[in-house]
Length: 225
Image (cartoon, rainbow, N blue to C red; front, side, top):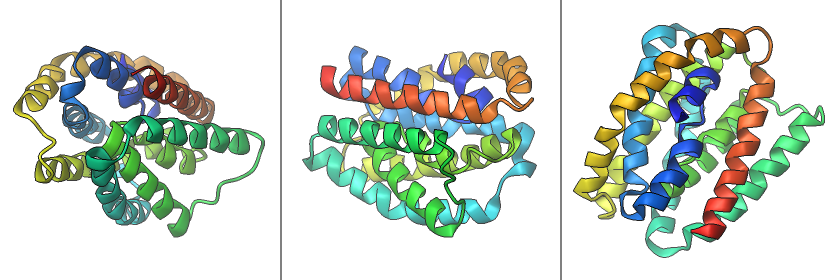
């Protein structure tokens, strides 16, 4: 289900899978989620890599680097639950502002800032898509999906290295992530028709809807677990 959402909108794998994995086995998080986050983008890039916004990607990765380091500190020392509530609330505020016709400028500063926030939340919780997606919400569907896919691939690889460095990447997290690959590929294949439908002018609405859902899931997960 997470792959269907991300395959059609460009992000959303974590909002579906992360709460389930946390409920079933908190010990594999966020490592297992990062394995999936690194693999699924390759399927998108295989079809749409030409649409990557390379300049924007550079700023996003630049912001992601320090954000991931902060996320690693949070994993070790700070309550992830409190972070989840805060991040979820921030995403909801951002969606309300953007839906009320307040344009979020897409420039180096905003993209780097979104990359930083994504690095913090992605490394700490496995859900890092909404900040970048909100900045790119006015782009065309293929550009959103391709740029986010390349960003997620690089970000997940970085997060896995950082988690390993701080001894928060057990072997069973890698095994669990590997088990997810087959159903994830099937979900991506199913997303094809939905992707074509959303590209008909509905992708911005879908991005905002998924961002809201992501925020609600993150808050609920943080409070409940």
